[in-house]
Image (tube, rainbow, N blue to C red; front, side):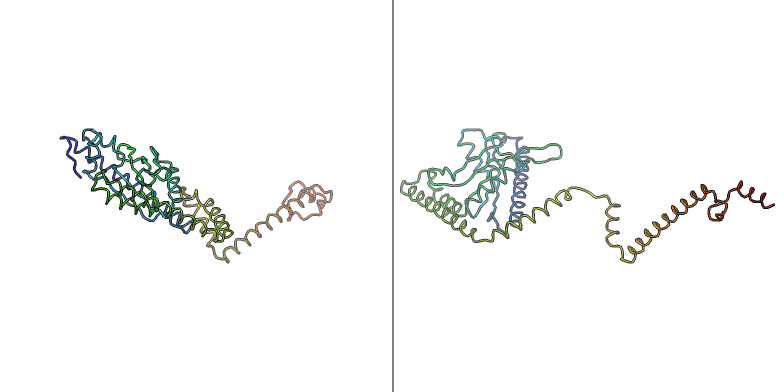
Length: 310
């Protein structure tokens, strides 16, 4: 992709193209993840399809010259906000604002500008939702916030915009008034169609089993919150191995371990009993009648008994 720039700016422009291409990949990945997660959670796909492009050299040059600026890499990066562009096509107008809100909530996405041509259509009838955002591109030695224009529209809006662009392009903005008027009427029909389809879809939703959906959401939320932290943490290998070994141990091994615990407890109880008897015997006046073999030797008492016997 070459532009007629001054000598020495080619390298800088190639660097800009690298950044714009990386930014498109970043946003595309984010949208794909959101779309897949939405399908998994709600069995519904809010995005029909996504297209992305880097603006052609002819379009860039035309836009720069239209603004009476010099065609330089600096001016392109600074003043052309839609060099990298992504278009998201949805089924219903409600999906447009839902997706825009999800993009806005991404912690590393910064929204610079919003143009809502759905609430406030252009005079020719054009409707779409535009966002200028930046995403961080991590290079080897720096992080560069790079601009991307995101357009979100319904299938009907995209149908009208594509045909209007093809038919209107040859007039270069100077189409006959009756054609402009008829295109505006078509845009009004498209808007009515979107509203009608949205109303039908909302009515269909009322026939779903809300109780089961609510129960499913609760169970899913409990499971998600339980394991969420595990995705970003590490369990020490020895702890994990011990838990696995304990879980997978044969029943016979577990039974033996339980018996060993019982035997250990019995031995401890017996030792305590013997100690108590020994202490009691030593304190008793009739301790000489107690067999010494049970409690151990006592030299002084043995000598006294031998003397008495003699």
